[in-house]
Amino acid sequence: MKKYRVLIVTSDGLVPPDNSKDLSDEVKGSSSWKMEYDVMVAIEELGHEVAIIGVFDDLGLLRRTIEEFKPDIVFNLVHEFHGVGVYDHHIAAYLELLRQPYTGCNPRGLMLSRDKILAKKLMQYHRIQTPRFLAYRLNKPFRKPTKLSYPMVVKSSVEDASLGVSQASVVHNEDKLRERVAFVHEQVQSDAVVEEYIEGRELYLGVLGNVRLNTFPPWEIVFPDLPESSMPIATNRAKWNRKYRLEHKIHSRAAYKLPEAVEKQIPAFAKKIYRTLFLTGYARLDCRLRSDGTLFCLEANANCDLSLDDEFALSGDKAGISYPELVQKIISLGLQYKPAWKRAEALSS
Image 1 (cartoon, one colour):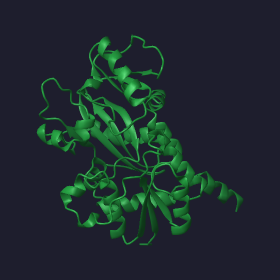
Image 2: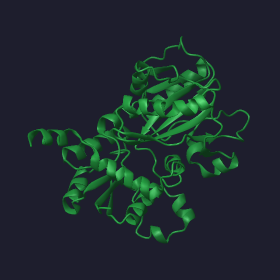
Image 3: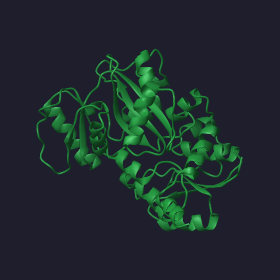
Image 4: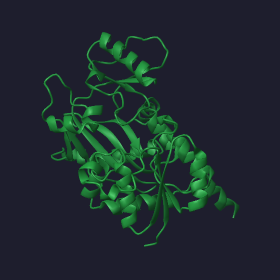
């Protein structure tokens, strides 16, 4: 296997410390830089030369490091710039302007999947099942929903990682809806998307590829011991609060005993969403499976969490792809991807 120079680029503050390999597994497992550490170790195990930097608001640092290190590929783990999540696609676009190969999704796919309202409109147009929804724009008057049924889920139209999502996000009447929309507008400072709550199983579908796509076995998050008044949704606490997850036995696992028709449907369903949103590299699709066997796509997460023990890597392992192999495939896909500058170069040669 050819060896490469790989530059990992992440957000400022997420670069593992120099002594990270000497820390306990418990400390590493609870650290904000766990994903970066897992990817870095995997790249080293593959025999590639690796460097890592964190960026906040200085593109000059990124450019200077590329000029000095001369990477064959940038492993792009940046999910925000200047603290703003919707700027993530600009990093990929900047790398394209530098004619620098990178891993993960292209700028258009990042932008479309980040904007939940636009992504849902595209899915509706292509007849992909997604919950019925309304957009509540920032600084616009509240309007009563006339075509949606309660309960509804209220969340930011652009934030990921369940930012701003809690049990209060599930509303059962107009007063609570108005209150939660105002919360998203004021506290998250973004448009709010309101969608009908789909009762059913929460499934995560992993997809890997640019043109030829591979789907991973569906993964499921389960909520076996929630308080009686709580709804089984992936809130911020349910995803990231270890104590809360242990207390209520929230965990993920390979989905089992799915209806045969659903098992057959999932690969085509996932690939259609992936292509509809112009995704490349890798992504996790968050879905709901209703008791009647209907699949709904809630949202798509381009450049999803790549931690060793997160759902995407676990489902890849279930498919027979070890973690280092997964990281290598992502590197290979980045090198194979043909952005506009490569196509223009080919035409002129």
